[in-house]
Each structure stands twice: as C-alpha cells, then as structure tokens.
Image (cartoon, rainbow, N blue to C red):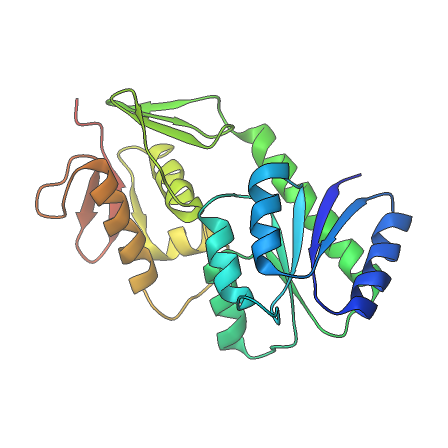
Length: 228
C-alpha cells in the first residue's frame, strides 16, 4: 500500500483513478491544482505522485521542475503528448515514468508497482554515508554536508554528486551519467550534464578553472577526486 498524490483537474478522470487505486489498496490524495500538490509534497511526503500536465494554475512540466527542487518523490506523468521530444523533456525535468492518455487502470497500476519497486530497491542498496575529503553524502537521507554545513541541492544535483562520489578516481562519461542518473539511453544534448556539473561546482565553492572535487577530463567526462 502506498500514499499516492493524484494531481488531476478532470473530475471524471480523478474519480475513476481514485476508485482503481483505492481498490488496489492504495491511499489516494486527489488535488486539482499544482500549487496544492507542491504544498502536500513538502508537508505530507506522499510515496508517489501521478501528475497531469494540463493543470489550470501552473503548467505541469513547470510544476514537475518545482517539485524536484523540494522532493525526490517518484513521479509518474500522465500526458497526451506523444512526441519523443516531449517525452525526453519530461524525463529530463524529473519524471520517473510516464503514461499517455487514454490509459487503463491496470496500466497505471503496473507502472506504479514498477516505480515503487525501483525506488525501494534503490534505497535499500544505498550506503549510510559516503565521505570524500570534507564532503559527506548521506544517500538514504539525501543530505550533503561540506565542512559540516548542509548543502541545498536539487534532486538531479544530488543524484549526480552521489553517483560520482561512489566512484572516486574514475572518469565518468556524459553518456554513463545520462544512462544511470537520468535513466535515458540518449538525450541529444550534452549541455544538460554540463549545466548540472556547473551548478554543483558553484555550490561546492569551486570552478572549472580551479576544481577541487569535480575535475573535467576533456573529451571524456568528469571525475570526482579526494582533495586530501
């Protein structure tokens, strides 16, 4: 059983999905606006979010990006958009999975089970803490401290940093980061990785010209090193 936040403004769809999810043993919290959803994500910490993109107050993709700045809750996007570019944009914005409308109750239940299973397996496999120099990463709590002070990272920033920290001294290619962190075989642009590395450097107090933890290997990828 999971507590599922259902963000959908269509009452008919909300009623049908709520019934299907409840019959499957889940607890459903339905809301019709993105602003409500963001408040619940931060205060009630649901196990999973089903997010419709056609919301009346905030565009669903923008809502997803905002959600990712405050939570790593698994998100399944419900969308009528079918183009590859749209799907790539959704996954890059932080969606864990997506379903295209119309979809059956059985379909969404199968997707929910798969996403929750991956999330739980990931947590169980994570170490308690990773220490690199004065940097301490706590994957299970999704917390990072530098010299004892907490760092405020987005979900993707944390995932990239943790992945690199688990592989200190190894050069990690952009393709590997995209495959393992974004869980996409291809993205079409390497700028996404570069931007996140740049943001991380800023928060770590370093630059590409004067790296401390994150070193770029030109033409290959990026490597985390222990400065001590």
